[in-house]
Amino acid sequence: MPLVLTEQQDSTGIIFLNNTEKRNALSEALIGEIIDALDGFRALNIRAVILRAAAGVKVWSAGHDIGELPNSGHDPLGWNDPLRHLVRAIQEFPAPVIALIEGGVWGGGCEVAMACDILVATPESTFAITPAKLGVPYNLVGVLTMMNMIPLPVVKEMLFTAKPIPAGQALNLGIINYLKPASEIEAFVHDMAASICVNSPLSISVMKEELRLLTSAHALSPELFERIQGLRQIVYDGKDYQEGIDAFRQKRKPNFSGK
Image 1 (tube, rainbow, N blue to C red):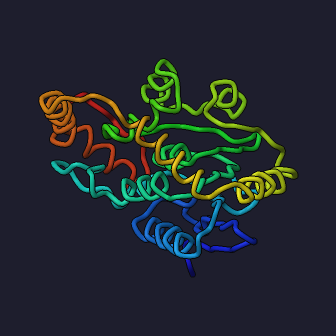
Image 2: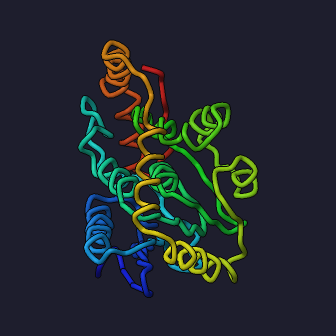
Image 3: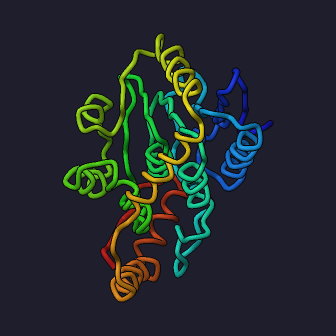
């Protein structure tokens, strides 16, 4: 069974996350199929993309597939991690990507959603950034993606508590663009995509790239980058990271020691 389904309606491409059995966890295989779908849409000169799960799901995406995280001593979210490839593919796609969100968005799923250009969600949707529950330090690029979307105090709250924020709060914070009932959201998002498709694709592509470059223009010295990477390595080498992974695989609560 494919993990991703695609449709085309005029100049709009639609990508359906299709692994509800595993709550659309971002496995390497699922990510690969999303990227392949984006590549196919690029070749077809698609002017807008809708990224969504099946209608009525309780979880839009459960985030990184924890079963694929490495054991201690290895960076679980390095530059070549599949999640990083997916975020870059969305950000670098030449047309707007609209996230149609129903249900919970967890961990790396939040970053994928926030890498999209426009977010539309149902009132029941929630957003949670959960690495602290697993003893994982979120990587620098991922943190910057979220900082570009979320006010810093809220980023801290979400990272430190790992508790979800409701869609209403996300709307007030400007994280999402619109809240629409489940009965209306599909038509609303398709109308938005259609309004994008009648505009100049070249103009939109250039403006999207301008925005991507400007929002990623954070000054960071080589020394500071190395310092941050050194801090992250402390976690990979520690007991808490392995405890978090073991607890998930054994379906129990982790007992973190801070070591």
